[in-house]
Image (cartoon, rainbow, N blue to C red; front, side):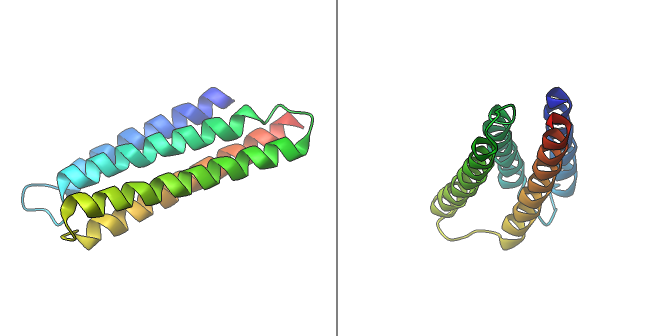
Length: 126
């Protein structure tokens, strides 16, 4: 079941990268390098957060699972803030706002997938 969740994250990443490449054409509304690197970074952060949460799912102590989920969520949140800060520093305050809003939507997609997978794994583990 855990491998299906990892596979789902990888498949969604590939689909989002292809969609990001298509909507950020030469005369497109989005910046291709920012969009593709942002999707890749959010995917890597989500994979790390999911791994931290899944690591504690088999524990007999339910508090350990809650701590794992909260730790993974907090880590994902902080790393995304750091990534946005680096992006703002690198672009010298010339950030194209639609890129940032689209990446926030990508963050939401990964959060929904991670939450649904953790819910399914926790129910199956009972």
